[in-house]
Image (cartoon, rainbow, N blue to C red; front, side, top):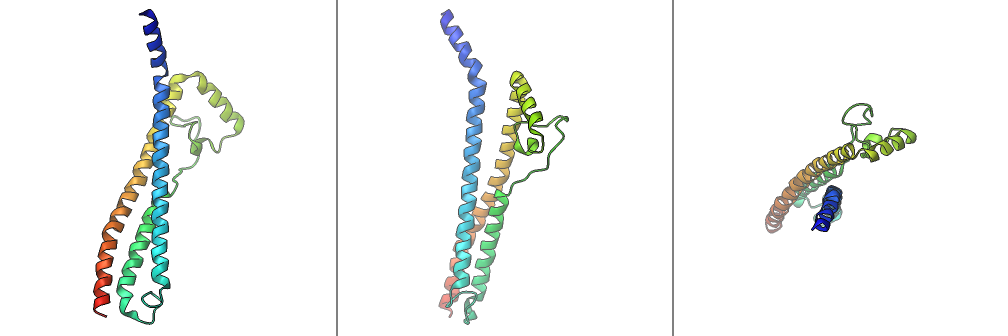
Length: 181
């Protein structure tokens, strides 16, 4: 029974590290997924935009201006989706804060990227001995990753809504103009 308690103590001792590792991996996976979705939407909308621009029979450059209104609507839809997808992937760094002030995070590259190597190494070495400070920095790093995820997925959700509603609407508009031709 004493061996069971000591084994459980060892497991509990490593539980916070395992939790941080799982949370980091989950956040990184979600960030990569959001960026892949945004890049897909950008490529898809650029493809649609180039298609409507290059078609000689019904495109924007066509001598037949019967499809001008649907083409402009498609252009607006594509540019709106591209803009929203770009906003979701846009990095947002506020500059290098002062490392001597509270809130500086030695684990976030946006904070330490302007700090000399020697100071960075010394600070990381000092942190490795202070588990409470290290866990505080790790938890704040995960929190800010979550805020980035929230922003990315907000823009992606709006982009998908615009595309999901706009595309069927455009099919109806094109159909109307096709049959009234």
